[in-house]
Structure formats: C-alpha cells, structure tokens
Image 1 (spheres, rainbow, N blue to C red):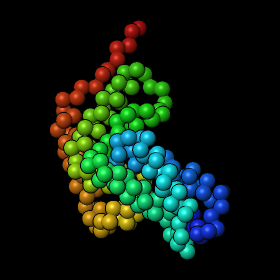
Image 2: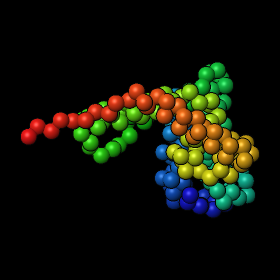
Image 3: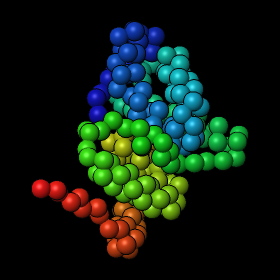
Image 4: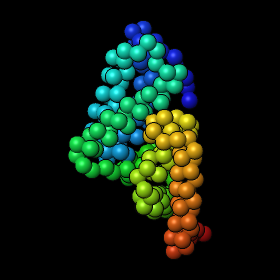
Length: 187
C-alpha cells in the first residue's frame, strides 16, 4: 500500500489528487458491494473524501487506507441501517470489468464460472464476504482489516481461513457437475 503522510490544514490539491487516484476506485467497489447500488456508493465515497478534506486531526494516520475504508464502511453501513437491507455482491460490477478479448466460448465459460463462484461466495455469512473482499480485492493487511471491521487480527485470520476452506469445499462439490466447453477445430 502506498503510504501518504498528511497534516490537517496543510493538505494541498496534489495530495488530495494522489489519494483520489489511489483509493477512489477501491472505495467505490467496496461501497458498491455493501450497498448494492453504484450511485449511492459514489455518494458515500464522495462524502468520505469531503470528510478527509475537513478532517481536524493534527495528523492523519500513516495509513490513509485504514481511515478511508473505515469512514467509507461506516457511511455505507449507516445507509444500510436506514434502509434495513444489505447486499454484498454486485455481479454487474464484476461483469463489466475490462479483460482481454478471449474467444466467445471462453467469455461464456468465464462468465458462468464467475457467476458460479459468486453464488458460492454469496452463501457465506456477510462478515466473511466482507473480510475476503478487503483482503483480496483491496489487498489490505489483516491489521488494516481488523481496524476497519473492529475485529481482532486473529479473528480476521480465522474468518478468512474458514471462508476459504468453505469456498474450496463448496466449489469442489458443485464443480463436479461443471463440464467445460471444448471447441472443435475444423480442418
């Protein structure tokens, strides 16, 4: 993770731009997974950066990722509490990611496999989904995840381990029925 040390009141446009470049997309993805709506997620991320600009602390932590993800998470969860609903998977976001141009059958196979994996991931408890996303999608350390989620570092490790173990088991059981497409080459 890129470290940016900031002092309140002395943040210039260049520092803010560096933070926006580094964290805007990961925060949007994170908030979208919590809220299930990219428009509301954009609002939460915007509010997060406004709060960063208005932060009155003498110094922002050496790890702005922790502060940004914590504020973003709290903002998203506040909206969820207001609406009494929470969704952790946004398949549309995953499907719209840029990729190399594979063959049509590879696209279909990959789409089925990702949908398949997302369905399995969706069977996990919400907290396990959240820590997996923070770890693998946002590349945060156990310590940073712990500080964001207010769980102990060891609990984060156990949750990730158990979630991966469950995913492996469920994927193994369900993938026995999955038959990959083998194209015929006409000569």
